[in-house]
Length: 113
Image (cartoon, rainbow, N blue to C red):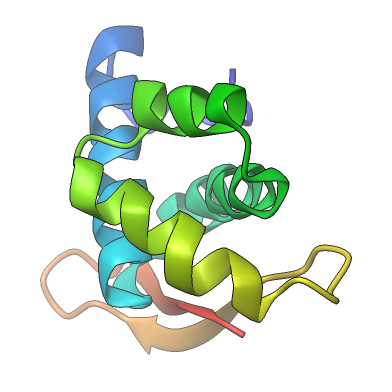
């Protein structure tokens, strides 16, 4: 179970949301959302990139079990993971951007380093 934050959702809703957020983040490379969601996305995204660095059939299947789109898995294994071949973790960066006007939630940008 990634992290301990419940984010106001039941387990299945939370996992579905995290799967979609990680998929979109890995597809675009950058995303703006709340700080708590950024902190939940970061370790999962780093795990997917680490699976991409292994580049085995088993690691590809593990990534496909979490990431919702096959083209994103292909992108992780073909483009993103080779870029971080020499790096031992720390593939993401979270930058705080202030508070959201509607509900005063603290927002931030998560991006690939």
